[in-house]
Image 1 (cartoon, rainbow, N blue to C red):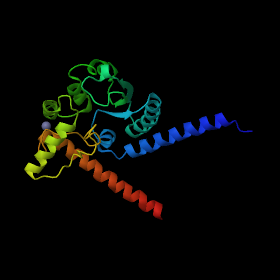
Image 2 (spheres, rainbow, N blue to C red):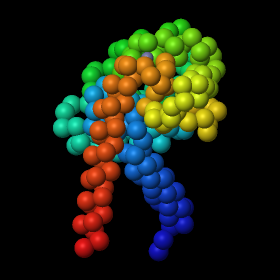
Image 3 (cartoon, rainbow, N blue to C red):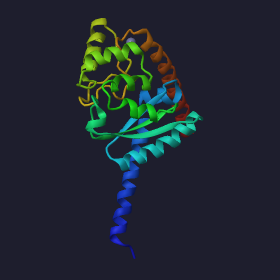
Image 4 (cartoon, rainbow, N blue to C red):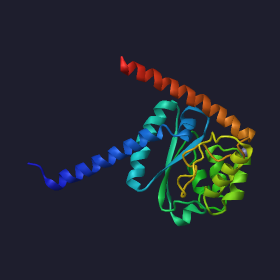
Length: 216
Ligand SMILES: [Zn+2]
């Protein structure tokens, strides 16, 4: 006989795992995550709404990153409460950090201080000039102001955005892209972009081959 409450609990947990899995699979197509897996980006963070979700995402992503990178990686969950988030937005969520270097000590030191964003920028591997410019614009408005400034620069210089800086979400603009450069023509940012576009090309090519194999 099936116990109704046990059944409900199992269904609830399975559904949660399922949505985490979808989240993990989708995240593998995000530019900054690809730059981390295939390129020289030192660290990334992904967000979770609850601690339970954070643990699930940490476990699943750890397995993928560890296997893909074939090197030791470090993970750490931080609760982004009002006190610890400093000038960061999304104050009551969790951030799961993954890094190719040991970062735990650095993290507790940088998050919560005034210069949280600057330190995080370094941890994420962004160019100094872009971090500096971001800080000038950001103040306490998160990435919205820097993203607008960057989009205006693109318009003025008559260039397309290739860093995936999106204005769709006012809470965390550009979070899914590579990062917000100080200018679409910043030489340091373009070096990273060149690396990323090489990765992107290889991933697309690989997907094409895999799909061909499946079609046989
Ligand atoms: Zn720059």
